[in-house]
Image (cartoon, rainbow over all chains, first blue to last red; front, side, top):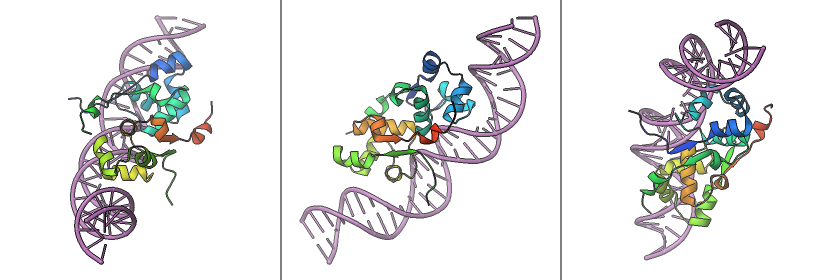
Length: 80
Length: 80
DNA sequence: TTCGAATGTAAAGTATTTTTTACATTTTCC
DNA sequence: GGAAAATGTAAAAAATACTTTACATTCGAA
């Protein structure tokens, strides 16, 4: 069913509400994406591009790595 | 020639050589991508996905934001 | 100089992200 | 309760990232 899964999760919604109190529409507008894109990313349907991730973090006033959490466990299984 | 493409640049090549002395092939293998992908990204032909960016940074032993540099100037022109 | 490893170019095909459009549900607030 | 704003689902098309394959160039060492 589902599939690949990205090994990335994000805290956009929490930060958006707790820290900046932006609506999805407002965030979308400020980062230059559509509301639908924000919805899908918040719902973890897919990970954003690196550029969009940077823009989101920038607008939220956070570092990329505080907004997006990478789980390297699948990478660990690869060899030296 | 090129087009605007992405507002992201990277220091993969410098870090790859100076810090870890990996070949493109080795880096590609460790991050689970192809050599061609590493070549294109190092050549700034396009930016990696967020996931690949995280993997590259992880393997290089750096933070995402030390490897990939975001220029927010195009974002700044958007309003409040 | 010659071999092999590393780097590079190109192009076609696959996979993933983003937009666009349209409508449904929930929340807020009067 | 009702209107408006905010959030949500869906799906097709467009844009971008990634792979695969094949061949060319550069560079270091034997």
